[in-house]
Length: 247
Length: 314
Image 1 (cartoon, rainbow over the protein chains, first blue to last red):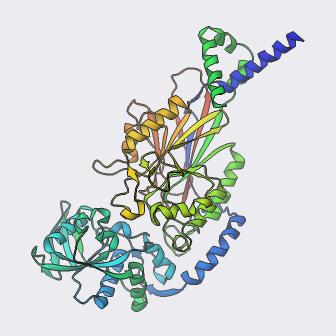
Image 2: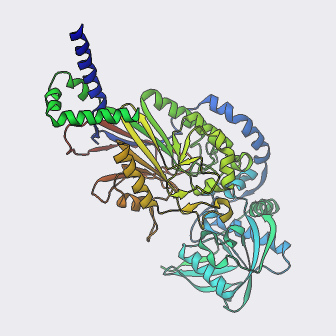
Image 3: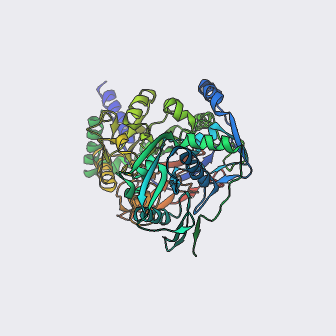
């Protein structure tokens, strides 16, 4: 009996040893896989039914077609048609809702949230994907010096969506800056339409932060894009040399 | 339990120092111990951005890709094939489709809970509805949020964010820590009020050392929302890897980088760290399998097999 007990203890000890062996990652069989789950034809119907009631609520509003585009709109640098759509929509809305003429629009490249909108119909949902943030439109009256600083930031970032401006990027700097067809004047006042995100200094636009001559239009950038597309019916967006890069 | 295990280990070490370990290791029963290799399957996503449904069939590059229903099925399939699965996310779960605008992230957290996520870290867009926006959805998440370089102690997140999480899979102890990007300039001030950003490298190294030395983790994974790589001095996953000491794998996010295979980077003591990131929107699921074998000798050669499934078109 006593022998049996100690034998069991010994066995237990061996097992414990097995459990407490220090492990080492041999690396020999480390493998890495990136699985793209489209062609796998896997689908979980429980999850599908779980999503269904949410989807139904959204689809009723999101699948509404508000217009179309002749060409596939692209998010590109230094200039792209998707970015041009956003700034053009902002200028279009602000022109109607601000007492002074709008000179310039600047939005951040990172604010374009999808790589493209395919040629064809545009739905409400697609504009939500393009601009999911609830960013509001703000007009700032800024001097040429501040505008120049902002455009230097745009150039350093390789180009952001712009309207009312033309310039060349040379060695990461904005040169030959034209505003409304005239050379930028540092002491002149310009009206800028942008998002509250940028006006708050977002994406390092610190020169705009706490700028006093700022008017909130109390309107979402996304709603301006939605209304612009509705009003245009069919979009024919172009890249028209707002920013060029000097090789 | 923790203490008991430590005591056992100490006991074995003591036994070994008396030569008893060597004797027993050569006995027939030790074969039993040697055979026990363990494979840990690490599955990971980043920057899901509320992409609940697969991309629509509209001719765009990503058409038909992603979608929660497909991911649920894929993860379930992998779980039937692999015993020890870890499921992790590197942040930016929120924002990008009307699902977030209308439901605030509820569905994202619920689906990730159904998939059985173990842990996620916070990305900048997870703050798009403010700290309160996260708190509101947390009841829908059965997984934990980890971050060790945001001081959240003065915010309502204090009770909810842990610096790290330890998981035990088979005989293997895995430590997972979280690292977040500087929120100033990316997130409106009001949305992260009270959170203090601390140095990612110092904090990651501190927590990783704790996981290694104090908790004796066999594998240390860092969930990072710093971004893959930048020009200049900005801290990134690559820079963190170079300056790290105990981290084995950095699962990244933020820059939406599709790495065809993980980067292998030498850390500050010359050891290899893997850095991986699988794009965005749930188009890909990353999978890294680690095989652990009982320690025989300390010098081992690392050979790696990389398997790629899926095209690189995104």
